[in-house]
Image (cartoon, rainbow, N blue to C red):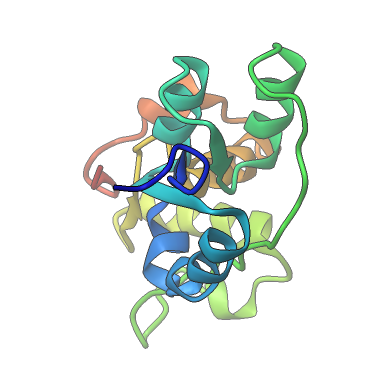
Length: 165
């Protein structure tokens, strides 16, 4: 029988699916668990869902990638500290024929403007996660730079703007 002192403690962590899928956690968690006699239970969901788990007190720690939401999470008193561990590169992918001309865009805002201009006339399609993830939050931020808030983005014509969830 294990003594109470040697029994591992437990830590519940919510993280993003991209962090889980990267293999990082299966590399670092065994060392952490050994060093701190702590078993880490991981829940992999989108950033928005992870933050909700944190707000509800269902997890002890978060590893997500939605900086603005993370800052607000701490500001609202749900967390005590935010530390940047890593960052994501967001990539716009599409067909080789590049009907919107995103290959020649100077930045993401320019690329989204080209997609919007070409999508609204039927030349291309944009597929959005539309799922409250960090990726979707990033997308909304780019649309906002073009003057489209979340409400206006949700009203985009579904013939060119597809919400995959």
